View: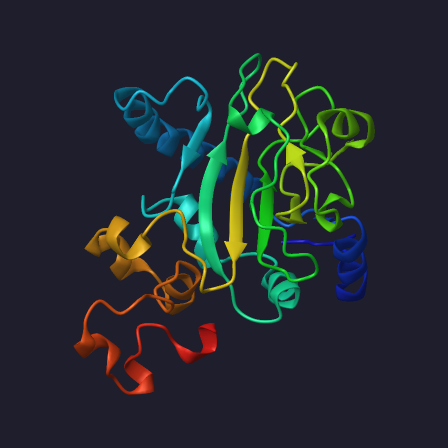
Length: 264
């Protein structure tokens, strides 16, 4: 995994403080990208019928959520999780995965991600609560819907108007295998895809371990999936930051705490 051209940690600090995002080129190999594309399509085919059956399909086309546990490259991505040096620096300690999704961004289609938005509601200023990871599984171009982002908006408490976003937003363009990290307060959206091919990506958010993830991974993942997970992935999915469910679970020595001391 070559990361030539990636920002050093001092530059990363500066970019995150000033514009709210940073791009890391060439993190994934083309072989990894191809495998993740195939697995993204496979898992989307599992999620889509559930969206349809539950009547929430209209604005979710091309989006799959909670894509861990299927035993393929999407799980392998978590086992060899990239950019942990930058993520740990951003939070000043450990974090957990609060969402893990796939965005296919088909030509001529739109989903809820096409609206400019922040991924957290509370404005926390300089306190870093949440971080987005955008993994490019295709070249991100102006034609195929490269993500639009409003640099510096993470520092402004009032969400900028649509007019301000339209005027000043810029595109995160890059190559398949590049990864962008951005403060979840930074206003962004998926731009329309005017090409003739899908613009695939992985969309992840990470947060402080005390945050609730969108999915209760210990309940969602079956025993087989949990048995395959390394300790590092268990920590990433919040297994070390669980709330006790009984007094017996709560009153335990530190080595058996459900919420480990290093997750605070």
